[in-house]
Length: 601
Image (cartoon, rainbow, N blue to C red; front, side):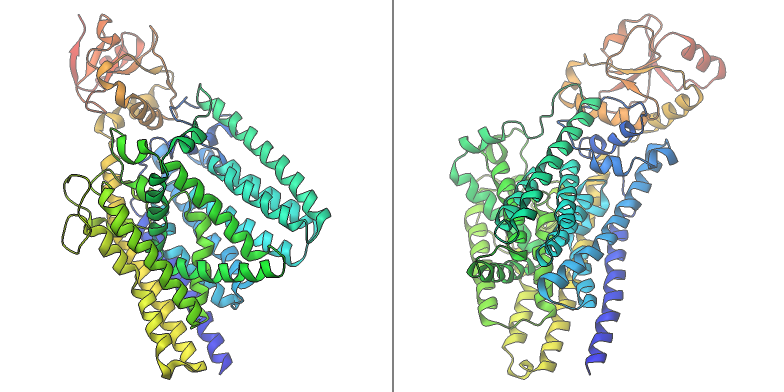
């Protein structure tokens, strides 16, 4: 009988991995670069590490770990569009690779079998918070892998304290920081856990504290050096964070703390709450034994990033007074998704183990009710549900994008119902409760309170989460595709210029900063053009003698006698000027000069 059960879970492991891979590939299919800051500002670091010349992009700063990992791709191709497609494949490979350490974490945290651990890890990978990232070349997949590996290393260290293990933990933690500045909080969480570890093995813990601190400082300094190679100003991504927090009103924190918890709940179909309950119960046992072990590590790490994210967005400016209103700031999930993956994993493991503890289920429903009621009655009326939304920032909530309102409505808005303009909140909440409802009903059936009943319940609940989670990710892809279409601005003139520059690699290309009408969008357009023109480097400032200048109709090149402005434009206000010189003469002689709008007399 047990052999049959083991065989079932081994088959289920294979099927779940295939499903996770399939949904990630489905989402990634046809992707195109959409973030002129987050994506370009990160992957361009790979050129720096190879010693290749790189354009100076405009960004607040991004740490280079993901770009360094992708650096070898620049040796394979100099075409940015090919680079992006290969990078998407690398991201898919990392997502699938993460299943292995995540499954080992499941075994050590919840006591499931290795095959069951693979099923749990695959379910986590198929859920929207992880799967939607397959549509982007962002740092999140590398961060998730490093966080999971660090968690696994910490678990092994707890089971068998060694100097080698604690040094490895410090190294992986530093690599996570090297991949994104926000992981400074993760470093702090690991250091705090190592302080508690002093009680268990003080010598090893002390070595770990020193090593982690030194490696983190080194990683941070290295990241800032990479930043200085691309951006001519200091790193400002986290500028004024403490000032924003101290000046914020606690009322704003209610919005973000509830909103971000709600995003995690609906994004995991309620399973994260189960994980939170079972991990908290395990942590309480650790505390009673005067220890902070595996459960403590998971909670400290997740709670630290959750608090950071909520405080970061819980300001009047972000929520209410920005001229460009953002809805995703209210329910931001991207920062905390990598850390909450382990909590979701614990919840899936609880389903696989057919947990029917009344205390666990009642506690889960109490937490779910609290999050839902506060979000629906307090947060939803004030939130600009109609405002701008980025799918990659709220991947857990974006499966319900079709329920968002078509137009703006005054604030405060109505309490959500199933039919009004604020229906998004209630529909998403009710849909996310389906697995918990199935779980609770099956646990309450007397006929299933047997060993065979436990197996039936485990299979049914896990299958429901996998099927609904995969479906949610597929639906969310629609919103992600629309987002890509919004930024897919590669007009024909871009292709013509790339062809010209391939034939004339000696041409000098520059950007004109003095266009008043496009100043508000100048940073974004500059990044796009610098990216599209690679391997040609677009200079930050134009000079007399340059061959091609991106400017505007009334820009400085308009006063250069003999300069021609092309008819087609890369952006509505951006124009392409070809200045007098060898390039312009060559294009005229060969008949390759694109259609001209006007020539300066």
